Length: 116
Image (cartoon, rainbow, N blue to C red):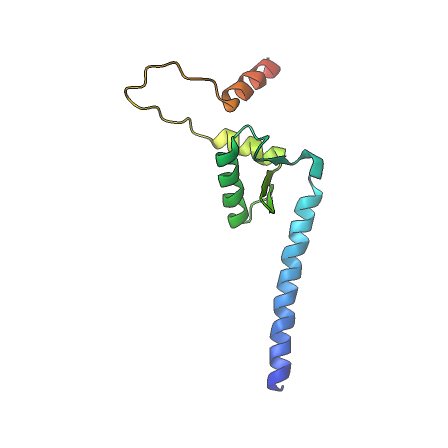
């Protein structure tokens, strides 16, 4: 086999790997309706935690997260997973003021009401 044929074979193999990865992403995207995706501005996680979660999920190749331009999207299932794994924020030792309810607290209350 000539050097050119070897290079072309290696490129074809690399393209096939990329095509497999794209097929997997397309299958993941087909599971969720784009209108259901939640961006960082509508997320109960808040914009910073939402973007951090999206970046982490994309880097690990986990489903339910995507970045399009400057928008960071999570699926509803991914939001629920992130909320279930979320740790409460630590308060400083001298903070005696009552804590304001966060969107996560409000969502937890609504879920408890729905659960009965």
